[in-house]
Every structure is written in C-alpha cells, then in structure tokens.
Picture 1 (cartoon, one colour):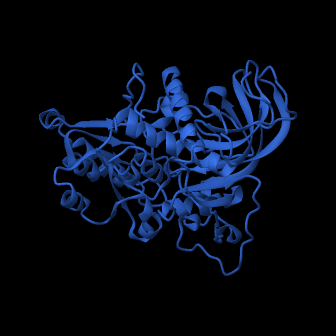
Picture 2 (cartoon, rainbow, N blue to C red):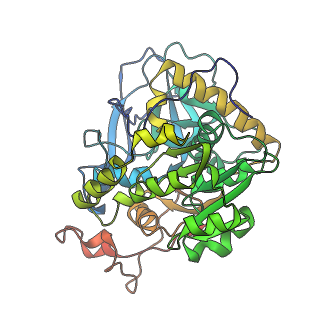
Picture 3 (tube, rainbow, N blue to C red):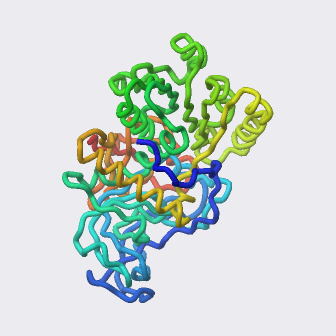
Length: 420
C-alpha cells in the first residue's frame, strides 16, 4: 500500500496554494469534440460565491460560459461533494483565497457531455468522477482531462462525488507522508467527517494498526464501528491516548491546527509524523475571525524546530489542491486513484454519505458542516428538487440569516436534508 519507489515525496506544507485558478462552469450545446475556446449559447445553473463572508454570499444563478478548451472535458454533473474547505473558502479564511465571483466545489461525478480538442481517452456519455480547483457546484463543469477518472463498475454518482477528495487525502496522508505500516498507531481528529471515515477504512487494510479518533460525543454511536478507540473531542485526548498507548502514536493527522499541533507533537513516538492538513479551528463564526486566525497562527508558530530533531519527530503539511496543478502531482494523484478504485471494486472501501441536498439548499447544507453535524460526506445534486419551505421552519439561530438582513423571509427557512 505504500507509495512506489521513485515517486517524489510530498513536501507541500499546508496552504501552499500557488494561485490555483478555478475552471469555469460551462454549458454545452451539443455533445461532440470541439476545438476549444468557442462560446456556446446555453445557460446552466450554478452556485456562485459572490464575495467572502456569510451564507448570504452564495447564490444559485444561470451562467453562460465557454466550451471546453484543449485538454478539457465538459461534464454533466450528477452530484458534487461539499468539504470543510468549501466553508473556509466562502469565508475567505485562506492564505491565498480565489477571486470572486467563483463557482465553489472541488469534486463531482457525472456524464461526459463534450470533449475538448486532444481528448481521446473518454467517450461522450461515459460515467466519470473528477477533482478540480473550483467549479464543481453546477449543472455543467469543465475539468482538465488529467483530473477526470472513470467511475469503477458498480459505483453510483453519489459515491463518485463523495469519493475523490476524502480518499485521496486520506491515502496520501497515511501512505505517502505517514508511511503507514503494519503494527503502527494513528490518531485522527474529526473522525466522523469524510476524511476521518476514509482514514478509518484505509487503516483497516493494514494489519495490526491501532486507530484513535476524536469526534463530538453526538457522533460516537454512528461511527463506533469504524474505530476501536473513540474519544470525545472536548476531552483531554492526550491523556486518554497515553492510557492505552503510553509511548504515544506513530502518526497524528491534524485538521484542527492551533493548540492541537503542539499536542499532536507531544503524542508522537520517536520517528513519528504529525501532518497538518486543515485548520478548522479558525472557523468559529459565520464570517472570518481575525482573532481565531491570529491565535491559530501564533500557536503553530510556537513549535520549536530544534526540538523536532532532538526528539526525532517530523512535522509535515498537506494540501490536495496544489498537487492538481503540478505535472508530478497530477501523476501521483492518478496513481493513487488507481489504487483506490481497485480497493472500491474489491469492496474494501466505500464513502460514507451523510445527506444529499439540491443546489438551492446549499446554505442549509453548508450550515450542517459549520455546525459539525455531518457524519460522512454532504453532497449537492443539481437535478434534485429542493424541499418546499414550511412556515414553521426557521433558521433564526443559523448563520444563514445573520448578515445585515440581506435574506428575504423565504430564504431564511430551514429544509431538512434527504438522508442517504
């Protein structure tokens, strides 16, 4: 399961987002190969982030956009995944945020609608899944062909949309950076999320791995079967881990950042690795908190690099998106997806889906992630009809209606999700 000899090491530290510009969401007039660059006069619905801030910055609107360029594939999107990173993008809670307006979303599944010039390894009508630097939350999405992957036999569109980001992240963290081997021990935070559940499934493929996970107590019953050692996220998890493993663990997967980075390093065994791959602790309210940002940054900056080599410990970082824009990174991603789809076909791994929402329900779906209420992946489906709003439904306490009264009354009602 480890990465093949000769593959370059993943050395990207967290948030090394080198100006990753998102592909436009584009409509297609007909399904055929095109020379690229032309304008197709057809509109398609998309979720658009009009500016950084609260949920009111998200709008569903129709957009006319160009046909796929050379080396791109136009997809008719059937489902798209929502990640915690999407919430951070909406708030502008990134070191290098994209320019707005932009169509959010980093993964989707669907059918090939049109081929750009030079694309030969896909056919119109073929079922695929894809990862991208923005643009997934739409009826139609243009994706570089190197980031498009055939749906394996038996995989649904919902599984296809929930699969790429979570499992690519989990695999690269564990095997390419962490070098997970038989008998090692792992601590993962947010064990109930999409990546956390993928980590649990991949750890189960290696004999003798001891997995510790932190999660909200409300999620414990739902995920208890996937982790042997489950710890309340508000508990003193350092003490709880050392009760079972006094020497600590070999790998810490930290998506929280801030004070948890130092705690993770304190839990490492000699030759262990703590990997930062998120900073969800920076998200404390509906909009970007400069206090939370500064606090997390300061706490991570307190890490003493001299102690790392004195204690034989490693601090690493990982961000999937920059890999997609590098030739060597794209090759690594394709090799990893081949291994993952093989495991899916064998029935070893499968994404856990929390709920499915219509594009028009994007605010409610994102609120669920903000509240840390999801167990597994949240999806959007362009073809799904939104559930009608009821007069008794209200989100007065949610962030959906908190920004300067911008939302009208009908948009400040809450819909219940379709639980998959």
